[in-house]
Length: 353
Image 1: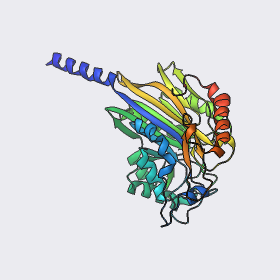
Image 2: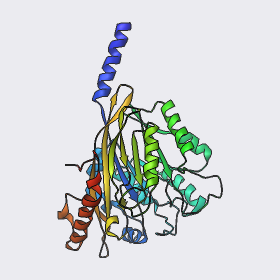
Image 3: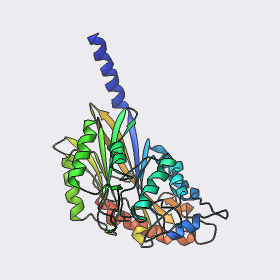
Image 4: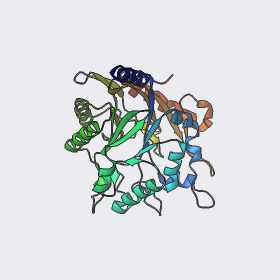
């Protein structure tokens, strides 16, 4: 019997060692007023399906794909900046295109105050879209966090925190996960206690439009590495910032650190905000923990509509043939600046070939 048990454990370990779990991350999925107008149909519904057509295969590649939903589903009237409220069909399209988890802890999550936060949680629940970062109350948070997904036998924990909410205070019982080291440490410890093989911490941090991380980001990243997390994935600056693989001597493993992936989709106009990066990484079990493998990025550009009936479309770097002639100059400038000013500073995170 003992020999049989050893053989079974060996087989399980072998299978785990050969099993790869693929993850995809994108940045800030926004909804400015012109985006809402472009998606509106004659019958009053909203169609976002053209937006993500050329990234569907990349999203489908992942066993689990994650996006930051940077707009409440606060109900009508739908509004853009500075206080967002997007149609529910926007989140539904993100789900339908393949996103498995939406992050909601960001500086716009209280744009429609507590009521909008509650409605966002309820709408995502009704659409069967997993979400973390904001909660109707402490009881709901306690049920959800740490959010652990079992993918092919690998347990991956996801946590999500924001630096703030644009000065809008919580007025009732809703919960926003703010960047608080004591709370983060407790969540990490609980995730580990509940058997997580890998821990991914998502952060809304940094300074908008800065092409390099600031000191507060670097300090927090250092601390998170010391806590033994495996992935640190950032957003908020609306521009791409460098990425790196850092080796943790204390835990003898590599950690993927992404300071900012920039915008996923938006109506912002500054050249560095006109696109973003998709980050792909694979995980594999080694013993009782997961290790990161083959982290890489893929750039894309947001092509804006110029005529009635057109919508916003994400154009991968490798597909300039999809561009309208009037978009080619901005596409080229965005890609050149992203590569030359940002990605040239990457450490161990190359472009996808």
